[in-house]
Length: 107
Image (tube, rainbow, N blue to C red; front, side):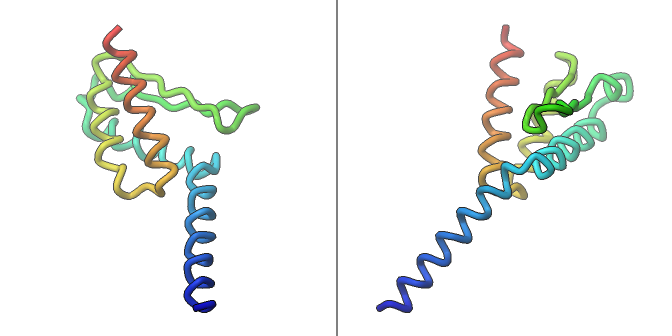
């Protein structure tokens, strides 16, 4: 019984560590760059320069996804295509980002 409890605790600790890793600024920056790169690869040539990610140098957890309204579709598609590969916390973060981008584009 104690051995099973240790296995469950170890699994729980591993999941907590994975959650922390998923919200690391370097991990987020990597996924922002991947999404931007994928969006640029799919976007028409005239929209490629209108897709950019800026990480705040002072607040490393703060990012700005700069894009034109015409390129939003490509950014949202890139987010959706990459969600399954992301760690859980990162996936939740980008799902929320996608919701915010969609809401902002409706304004």
